[in-house]
Image 1 (tube, rainbow, N blue to C red):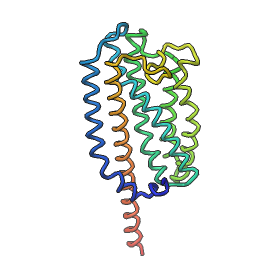
Image 2: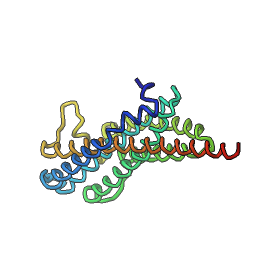
Image 3: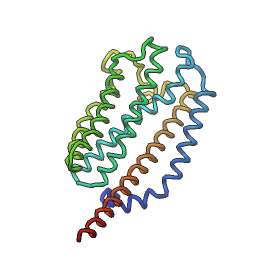
Length: 243
């Protein structure tokens, strides 16, 4: 199945009709999530209105981690099976994941100031999320650091796979160490502990952000495929001029 999808032409054909539904669905979900989160969900009895930051913070944090996992898996496919499309997908994911990492850190700081009295603490969860951003940054820098693209892709892929070690640290840091960050209230063995009126907008935002990230990945991959076709065409024209 993956070999079939690894063909760039098949990938473009398969995803060609997905972009419009994805952008419509993601925009609708995000707008609904923002409406319910800002105007229809209750205040927290301790955090007050500051709790509404979580409707952006939590989906961003979840996507930052999940996209890095997807990036690493794509890198494994690239290193093992040498699929060039896997490398393009990895390059498409990296900047999106980095943006969600920054959004997580920024919204976390905005929440931390009124709750903790400071913009930043070297909390285990916050520190591991900052490290995740550096892994994203390192991947993007390495992939463009060599004269031969293949050398950069291999080095960046190895770094991404090493970075998988950080994901369980992000997830379980609040359980392994004493931190200021609150424990998980959604993905729990005994079910979500969050109020249902808060869970609705949070779910809408998570689905909306996820669909939007898929739209961006597809758009990035198709843009890179188009750039490669243009480069090949220019090279072909140049060779004809010299022949």
